[in-house]
Image (cartoon, rainbow, N blue to C red; front, side, top):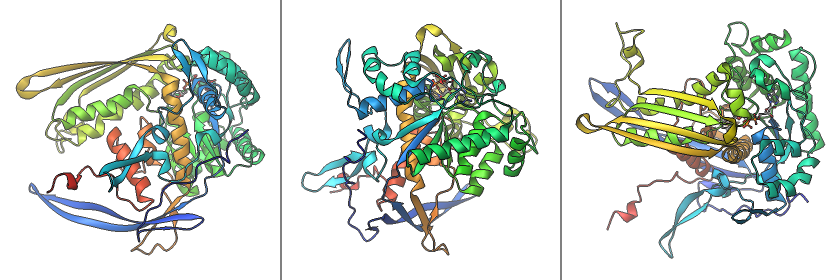
Length: 533
Ligand code: NAI
């Protein structure tokens, strides 16, 4: 039984002139406060700015399908099995007792937002993030997808060796009912040669235009057969090597479309999937580190106003780094080096043991401290202009940062991450902090895929208009969904804007945005009432 019907009604009412409700929409006015700053001769001239927007959120949650590319992998099979366990309320025995299914690790379903204070008790009131606006319940997602491996979903779950046997045993019939993934596009050059043995479910031929059309038809058929309003296409397949950016090939939307027609060798499978999703008007999220979003894809998404988000799930080591490096720099301590080692033994680790695929991951993991360093010119010399061009000084000071990944089959999905932070402290002192972090990789990644899918669906229902300006009609958000950054290692942002890596800032942005859509200010920790008489 698909429990779509038995969902709790949307629980929030904001009583204010800023917020109005109809059967179809929640509409809220919001003032975006900022400041413009001019710096002349060490003087800062600041002008506070105010801009009024109106947000309109469609209340009806779309019936949503999640089509995973790499459905038969560790993430894809673990996600399907755990959602099925939740949906069918399967409980299982472990050596420490009975385990209930849950959504721990989902920011939307297992973390809360502070709404305000209950005047009768003076205590803060919190709700799950997923209650702030109407959102899809993960149990209601309809699953589908592709894999170059033809294992059925129950076999794929067994192969992954992630879940307890008693859960596997009970969920296996439900997994078997999902059947096997659709055949996928396999261009051997893009993933490690060691993956060839599993490629027994591939779309024949080398004609990339035919592949694009086939994937588009798969999306359309899945949508129609399941009577869906929305399909999110999610890359959770192997990490590919980087695509070279070649003028005339993938630098513009038109060049890219022509290169697909010509079956150009630099067009990767993930780019073909992204283009298929964009042309179908369905959102595409990239959970792996490669540069799927070559400039031509970004231009096409903007042209078609079709949503994209990425790159690379931020589950373990990098998540910690985006908190820890910021903590050090914001405490006025200067990290001199960050040395990160990983070893893992799952198929992802096997694929990453090849140099070009490791390179994609290394790039994605490396940029995570850049914005924190750039925000503190007291600790790190900013880039110098003038005669130093091309030298280290021209790039600005930066901690030494290395990333190593090794494949150790014995540890399976249980990745080990070791990080050393070596920092300069007061008056020439040194501090060394080592962190050992054991990540059950797929169990950390699965809730992120769910959150990304659910947020993406929500963001397709939010529109805005500039109240004071000329903009009379509501428009959709910019196609690059940088609000997904919290769950992503190397966030893709609107061209020309800065990447925010800090986990706290990413969460604040998301919380503030969700609240703005119902006419509330973002959470302030000013708590003035606790500081005044
Ligand atoms: P996996 O190797 O178990 O699964 C990947 C699946 O993709 C395999 O079943 C493979 O057959 C399939 N595949 C490869 N090329 C394909 C293509 N062209 N079309 C369709 N299917 C294809 O890997 P896992 O652990 O599920 O991770 C998936 C991706 O997510 C990897 O790229 C990994 O780097 C990334 N990731 C995973 C994180 C985690 O914590 N598990 C964190 C960050 C990123």
